Amino acid sequence: MWPHRADGSSGLLRSVVLVALGTALLTLSAKVNLPLPYVPMTLQTLVVLVIGAAYGWRLGSATVMAYLAEGAIGFPVFAGPVGGLAPLVGPTAGYLFGFLAAVFVTGWLSERGWDRSVLQLFVAMALGHILILAAGFGWLAFGMKLGVEKAWLVGIVPFIAASLIKNALGAALVPATRRMFDARG
Image (cartoon, rainbow, N blue to C red):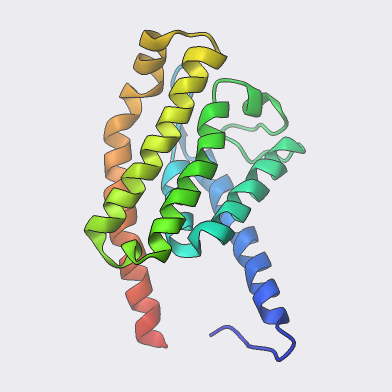
């Protein structure tokens, strides 16, 4: 499906296209949000974890870094019509930087076969979600000085059920998509 060239440039082109596609999906997923106090609920964690599972840790990490860089330079890629440094130092900062740890772990586990089983991928994605939520919680509690109790109530509790639903959706979607593409090859 992807053309191979003798000079190896198809691999670079493929990576560039996949990073661009991934950052576009992350941007779109940020725009689907439920505004909550401090941190909105978005579809970004689902997309981050699917990118990790589908791309692996290297390309997945590069994609999330490109997304964060796009936002840092001012492109309106984050939830709401915002870009720039404010989201990277405000209440959402911990979650955004937690994306890197999550995509790394999910991608690393995926490269070791965890993406071939719905149950194992669910666990890999759950670990990714835990990393994102832990980074967000830590930043809210200590970086934003909300304290442990308030950070727990606004930064973890509202996201638990949605995280489980996103894990189930992602864990079913990735292997099904792989089977679909494998059947075509």
